[in-house]
Image 1: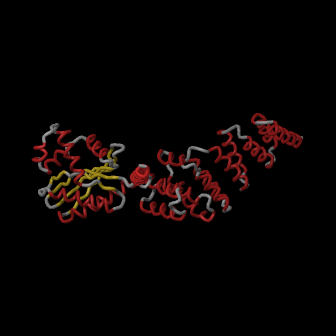
Image 2: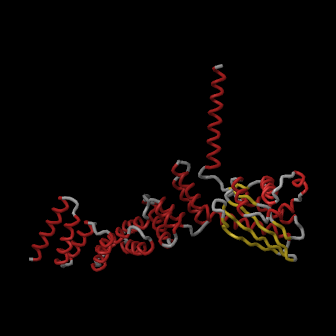
Image 3: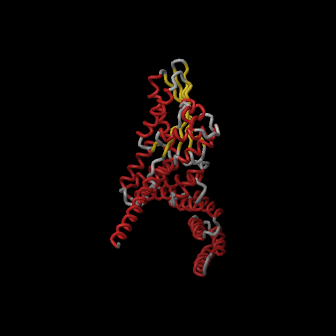
Length: 391
């Protein structure tokens, strides 16, 4: 009895572990998006042509390695159910048997988008493909609607044409390439996060992550999230300083103040790339590069302006650009008047330039922002020294 109990417990543990493993594969960070290709409506003289394009598309989408494609028979069973019970509103097995597949597809083409979304959700699909194959003499045209299930909205309307029925397969292959591109663009942030997650879990090395992100960038160019991830990845690695600067410049060129998604991604990254990029230039003793970085960032990135202006004041002072330094410090204080350090830097700048009156005036303002007796004492000492100097 005890042995049976032990075996039972072991079986339960094994089943539990397997279920967790399976769930990790299906729902984990590296889960492939699932796509369902619905039957195409055919406006062709040969109805089987539309069925052929679907098969080719399923095969090509599966071969891309990006998707998990819902099986054709499974898809059709859901389509048939939707047509019979949501459109015709009857429950009769004889009609199921007697209704031709082409007729079923024609009826499905009239189904409401909400029903299509419901089918896709039941199939646990992320994307749907449905379309029409039209014939104009010897020429053929495919009109495809690619939709995202989560938002129940159309991602893209794709159109492809070919000169003859022999080229329909080639047409389907080209459309599949476009589908992969559109869906990868939509899911690129998830891909980036999956790569980063694998690195944190020790499944990828530092160089492997960099290579994967660079490969992703070459496949899907112009994606802000990829370059942001590369920048963060290079940060803190002195040997990658040149790569860091290149990615930082890319971010400066790409960031659009009106793009909410990029702004949100940047805020969630936990890094201020422009401050770090400026520091990278400073390490290379390229002060003009750092100054240019801050001036550009102020125009496109609506946060951290007080810090940027303060750093600009410091850099302009190092470059002996007095007026620019004064203006930068003053701009910083307009945003954050309580920054005692910036005020004292402005006092020192006035004093260095021989403008003692303005230095005294600014130093008197400093007294209001001293947080404790120690800070207050230092400000008073500076003020006394300046007043003595004026005499």
